[in-house]
Length: 342
Image (cartoon, rainbow, N blue to C red):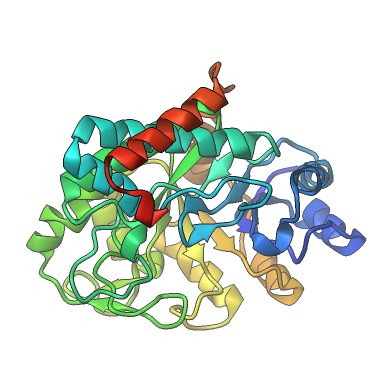
C-alpha cells in the first residue's frame, strides 16, 4: 500500500484495535511517539513493532529526543541528556571538545532509540536565538552565532546517523527570533531579509544536505506578511528550497499547535499546498487523525522521491562501546562546566 503524506501521533502506550485499524487503513508515512506513549523499554519496543505490523512495512518511527526540557524517553529507564546549550558551553572553551561532545551525545541517543526500534529523531536544532525571544527555544539552542550553531548541529546529526537514526533538522528557516511560543500563538518576526540571510538562514544553509527538516510556525513579515513558513509557498519555495538550498524531505511542525488557523484538515491542506512533503500531527486525538488522513493525498512525485532518499540514508549502526562513550561524554561535559545545564 502507498503511504500517505502525513505522520501521526498515537493516544497511549499500547496500540488498541481502533488505532491498529486506523494505521492499516490510513497508511501514514510514519508514527511519532511522545511521553504519553512511553513506559519502559519493553513496552516501547512492543508498541513500535505493533505499529509496523499494522502498517505492513518498515515505517519510520519518530520521537523528539533532544535532551534537557525536550526528552520523551527519560529516567529511570533512559539516561538524562543535557540541553543543546551544554554543548555550546564546551565549544566556547574548546571547539573540538564541543563538537566531540555533541557527536557523542547524538551517538548515545541513537543507541537508546535503536534499542527500542525508533529510527528518526527530531534533532538537531539550528535555531539562532536573540535577546528577548520567547524561551520556547532558549537553552535548547547550541548558541547565538550561526557558524557555531551549524557546527554543533552538524556534529549531533553525524552522531545520530552513525547510530542508525535519521536526524530531522528544525525549525527551518528559524524559530530563534520568535517572541511567543508557537505551541500557543503565531509568532511574527519583522527582521529585514538581509539580516535573516546572514543569521537565521545561514545556520540552516550550512546544514542543507541533511535528509529531513521540520518547518517553523513563524511569520517572517518582510518575506510573507500573511502566512507562517509552514503554510507559505513563498517561504518554502524562495527561502527553504532556494536561498537555504534544502532539497530533502520537508515536514510541517505539528499542525495541531495553536499558531495555525483553520480546521485541522485545512491546516494539513495548506501545509502541503505551500510545499511541505509531509504533514505532522502529534496529539493522538482520533477525530483529528481522521481529518488529517482525509485531507492528505498519497505520497507521490517529488515528495515520494525525497521520502525514498531520506529512508535510504538509514544504515546499520557502526560498532560502538556505549560504556566507554558515556564516560567520555561525561568528562567532556564536565570540562566545559556544562554540568549545571544537565
